[in-house]
Image (cartoon, protein in one colour):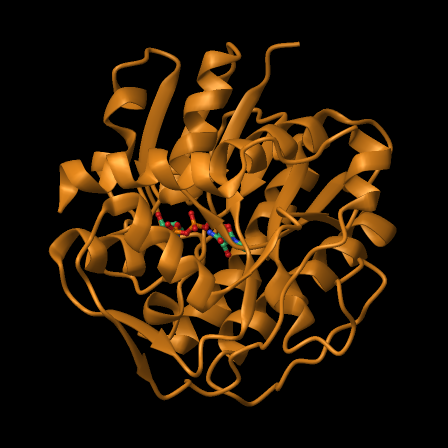
Length: 312
Ligand SMILES: NC(=O)c1ccc[n+]([C@@H]2O[C@H](COP(=O)([O-])OP(=O)(O)OC[C@H]3O[C@@H](n4cnc5c(N)ncnc54)[C@H](O)[C@@H]3O)[C@@H](O)[C@H]2O)c1
């Protein structure tokens, strides 16, 4: 069925890919973004589509509209530490107030809401790999808390709106995702390494480089979110990520190889509260949605490197 869909944060990295995929599926899409860290450049293709509208709006404010949305994807929130630590108060407000405004809108229009939550709600995990049943290990007063705790509170709000006001919710916990249109300077590890390698600059690893992450290509995530949104009678939370785990050192070496770079690898001090290990258990997504990632890291990196070659 064709839907009328609101995507908040649609001018960001993941949001722009989601808007494109929803348009390709024939839906009508309204993208709301305050361009805090997104860009209209990310949605140039979408803007040519008659079924696409961009509205500059801050989700911390109520979104007053007569449009009868049937689906809301809530992605608005700075996602990289560099961006979410620029204005931590705005970050936690965006998570909580943005979520609240979208749930109120959903209650009014009968829309189903998907919240882009995060593996960061597991903090520095004491359980490995992380399952949805794990409650997490987050420092509530640290420098990452504006993001982690904001997302945790947003999940709470979703489930309370669901239980109390019967709003239909879908909560996806997204693990590290990469791909074309990541911002050049927002400090995320994949884009950082690629940009440094392409510029021939030293590749900076924080800590000894033995901390791990699992990297998911953006197309896999978008496919998963759309499947989850349309699945009947589920709420989540559901982990979405690629369970293949790499150390930062291994990732740096891969990037150097794939870019044929002459960059040397250098080591810097680890920032506060950096999680040591991250790996999703995706058995719930597999069982419930028949979903698992298809794009392996080398293939995804090649596509991402091709994008960055055009922009740096
Ligand atoms: N990329 C990842 O690895 C990852 C992992 C876990 C969760 N997520 C979540 O997915 C979502 C999208 O992430 P992304 O990587 O595309 O990040 P991004 O920073 O590229 O995109 C976020 C978008 O939200 C917009 N935004 C920020 N504050 C806003 C506000 N107050 N009002 C309206 N728009 C606002 C930004 O301008 C930007 O376009 C975020 O909610 C993020 O927390 C991403």
